[in-house]
Structures are given as structure tokens and as C-alpha cells.
Length: 113
Length: 110
Image (cartoon, rainbow over all chains, first blue to last red; front, side):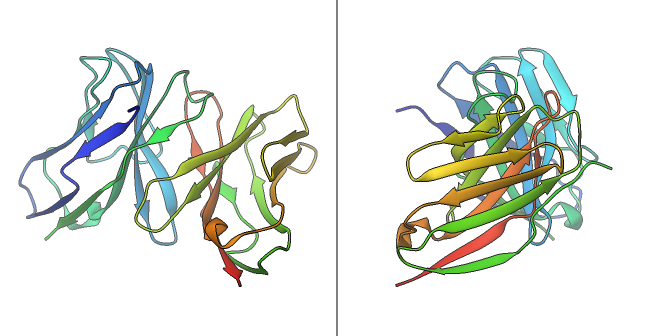
């Protein structure tokens, strides 16, 4: 089954404790992206990647890192999480750089205390 | 700055009626537009897209209209059903980025 998976689905952590949210897709997509969704602000793009070893900042990249060492994986790294990073995070992938249907993962709800 | 916005945050329609959800975008460089549907507890799901060289595109029960003159995008849902109840987002794509609007919550009354 074609899908985007994220882990963990739920995470509660404390300020400053490094964490990684994994994202994996099995559709051989070149394009992958991370978004955060907050009430009243909709979905905002954090980082995106057009292919292996190619990453670019979205609209809200501060406090996040990403890597794209393999085509299927696009982990989101929070080196020193802060409470304002409490949010619902979505990973997505598509076959062409943003110009095809993006498939979204199920979301990761992160709470930073 | 860049922004994509929706005219109404909520929309309530009677089952069987047609729904129209509107969206305004601001980036003239955007050449691709998408509508997504998000049901409670789930990730956004692609509905329909349109490129800037078109002004209308139809899918199954859905139609997207693009007016580049006034930078306006709309989603029309024919014969709205209870299963259409969700939050609908428009998004624009200037290059590799994807910029979402804030969303419109559609409620379908039986």
C-alpha cells in the first residue's frame, strides 16, 4: 500500500531535549516536505526536499533541521525543542517538486513542556 | 509577504446543495494551485489541482475555478454529502514551496 508513515504519532517531551520525528514514503517520490499545523494558522511549510541531499527552507524553518540521505526518508530534527514548537506535524511526499498530488502522513502531535 | 487566505472560516450547507469555497492568493509567481480536504484527526487529502494556464478544471463532483486577474480560486462541490464535512484548504505553489490558506470548515446539514 502506497503510504507516508510518521513516527512517533504522539510525543510529549521537555524543553531542550533533542528529538527526531521520522518520515518514510514507499512511493519513490522525489519531493518530501514537513509542515506544522496550528489553530488559526493553517499548515505552514518548515522544510522541503526535491531529492536526495537537496533541502530548502520553507516558511518557518527556525528551530528545525532536516536531512535527506535516502530517497524514502526525511527526518525532522528538533535540536533543542521549545514550547512554541508544540504543534501537529505532517510529512508529505509527491512525485514532482510540489507540482503533483502530495500524499500526507497521519501526523505527529508534539507537546513540549 | 506571501499569503493565501480564505474568505470564510466556516460554511454550512444543506445536504444535496452545492457548496462554494473561496480562496484569495497573493503571489503572482504561483503557477500551480491545489485544494485539500482534511477530516478530523487525519492528514490533508488531495482533491483537485489546477495550473495557471487553465481557468477551470473538473473532477468527480468537484470543480476548481481560477481567476488570475483578481488572484482568486474557488472550489465547487456539487450535491454536497455528509461525507464532505471537513476543513478545506487551498494552496499555491510558487516554485518548490507550498503555501496553504487557513482553511474553511464545511458542515453539511442532513
